[in-house]
Length: 375
Image (cartoon, rainbow, N blue to C red; front, side, top):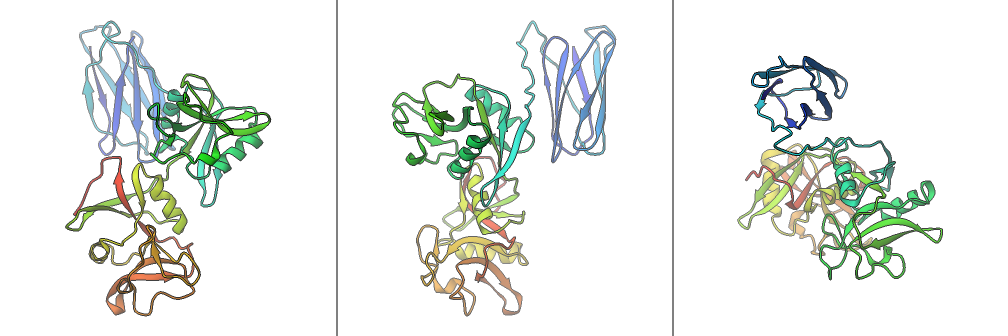
């Protein structure tokens, strides 16, 4: 039995073939995805797929002959764009069915400053299924990593759901190791309840103990609990390999909401990524900005740690005097960005009176997901 799906070119599309005469279609657009199950009978089936603001009708035609082709005719709304796919599904006798994940409703709230968006589940799952449910949410979502904003999340649970236990993504990767968050950062020892974690604990959750909401370990992944998801900031970074001693820098093509938001966004990228400190590769970055982004300003991690001290990069190295525009830095200012001053024909560091402007920003590090690396 063969199936052919007809779509329109222009965006990613995937069809997962399941058994028992049913098909699960998962369609991704740039900003939204749609999921539906098409249940075939002996004649035809129809279904509606909800997109961002449009519907698509789907007709599955079967002429009762298993050896004949079936045509999945997708009539797309204005917000979906797909390409032509075709393939042969495996019948039920040959493979077990893989049901579609239907993400549950979440209570989404903004917490912290700069804020992040957290979703608190209304259903209970095992730890690994909680990860899957978060990943199935619209956008880029994962089980919550709380190396920052732990206290804000804990307080929200204490006030709004004091009797619930919530999975977050903190695990002990091997039996004698320290607990880490999913991004590899160590769990701060100060957030555990007294006596935790136990040497046998493998995973952690936020829960009520003696009328107090605490962070506690457990030895099993299989308990069914509520869970906290977080929405990872969606940013576009153009990663470039710079310097003779090659190093990756990601130049944002998304405006920030200020320096702290830029810093947090770099840290939230998957992998080992942070706001750029340019104690090395400074001139490589400057040349790249002059060539590719001459009209843009970029936050980098150069700050004055104390009111009258020298500017430093995040790793504690002093910012060299030749990195600044003439007359900089202003002795009253505590943060800096890279700016091109056209009439001086100079791109260099310039101090800033505020950390709030929505400048672009530069990340550095090793992203976990594949990137298009430009030299």
